[in-house]
Image 1 (spheres, rainbow, N blue to C red):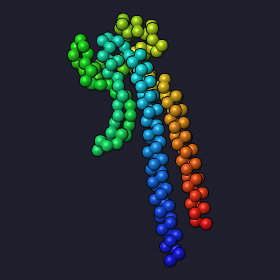
Image 2 (cartoon, one colour; image 1 turned 135 degrees about the vertical axis):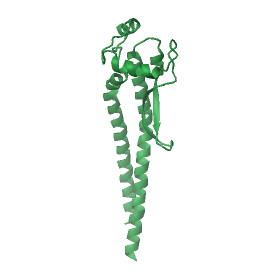
Image 3 (cartoon, helix red, strand yellow; image 1 turned 30 degrees about the vertical axis):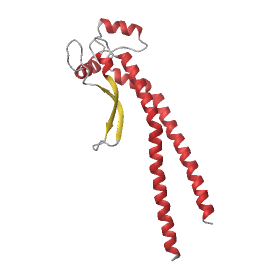
Image 4 (tube, helix red, strand yellow; image 1 turned 45 degrees about the vertical axis):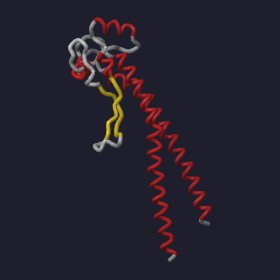
Length: 176
């Protein structure tokens, strides 16, 4: 009979630990999300400063994106995208195709040169205007983003450890 009681305590203890781990993951994600959106906004601002200018449609088309699982009920990734519904006011075509060409083929990444308006923008921008604008913006922000995310996770782990220690002490005191 004593053996059965021990098994029940262990089983309940593991369920409790599992719930606490699930809560840890949920809490960590909740703490990380605003930091993530701030960083994505920063990347967007920098990428817009780097985009070549023709009609400003390319700048406007850079936006935040959430990618959901197949069921559509859980976010599995955050990032940037080029909004395909933004149209070039001159050609009335979607900016998406133009964005791919500019990103891959315009200097400093590709072989095509930027136009006169983009050269003027480049002269006053703290960043080089041209191709690879999304990739280069991500590279600029990468180190700070990694540091901020590490801090969020480290703070959550510290909180989790503190709560686990308190629970363990409470449990041991109750079962002396």
